[in-house]
Image (cartoon, rainbow, N blue to C red; front, side, top):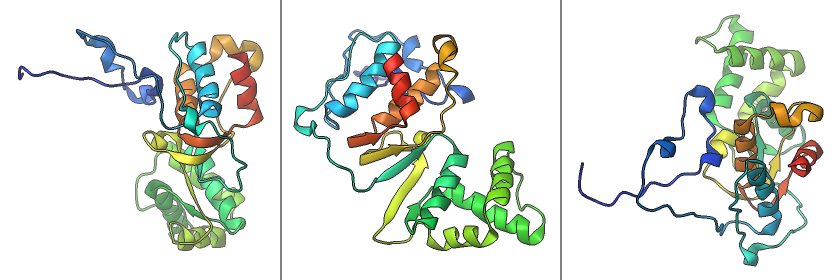
Length: 231
């Protein structure tokens, strides 16, 4: 209610939570002046090139302008982060990293799932009411990994070690950045023949956010490269 200047900042292409009721509030607001933040100081042309393909598909006329000083594509010896579309993929990547002697840094909700799995195995009941997704993840863990492996992950995760790698979901990565980003192959894109009719715009928003978390290099599975070329 104060008579003060109000500045509203947002990016509709980073809207990720429409599935739980989030809306683009900026569409309902009127402004005296509209300005565009198109220059990124985070990444060079190799990142902007792929992100702009998605913006073009959306019909966006304004493109991301990259930082010329960062237009470098280094050879990647190791990834700083693995970004997953789903929690199930995160669980699998964490377990596989431990098998490869690489210690994962993972979100607390995934640690809770591992702990709950062990509790069910030992006591045959759950300490909390599990969501459908958590039940599915625990069932898949039971079928694919041993109790020893889960215990081993819990003993190692988030510990200081020279071969650490962060593993998180794209939703949790929003607003963050890393030099080298690896994106997992767990998006649900439709058959390419029906692509232009079935593609979810919010699913593309998620991929757009994932790509633009990188400062130097981003790994995209070949199928995503194929879709970006369709764009």
